[in-house]
View (cartoon, helix red, strand yellow):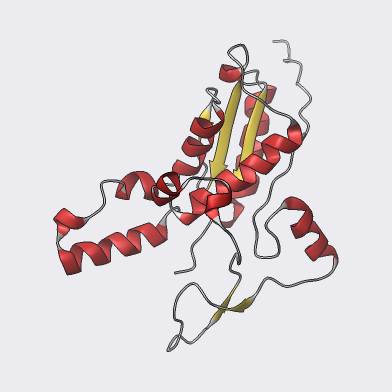
Length: 199
């Protein structure tokens, strides 16, 4: 049996939303400067918790990337994914056309997905009744929503999936995306991980 020739795969664009920066450049400069992203929690009242620090993404405004209606239908982890993907797509100069859209895919993983949405909707259901639970509850919560929303936003119709492998998720997604390109199922992939699990 002959071995298949392996396609060379390269990174052409980078995007990042992190506790040390709201862009790849800002994050990288913070890392070089030894800046920590760990500080007092501000997303919720941590009084009474034994630990009141965490690595929050601070200063993130989803409306820089999404209109209010779109943002309301996305958990924070998906908003992060869309923002980072937008930076990466622009950095790469990647654009969907009728000729290439089905050859560009998305593989964005999440270890836990929309846990803030899950927490909020359980509270709504128990306090106000199940008929008050948002119809967007499940679409906002599931881990594959980051990949799905990025595909929809940029018109990428190629392979679309989600990796859920705990702390290895982002790296795992990049590796899986590389293999998709190597085997010829796509010519380009948007890949990485997104998390917003501090609640």
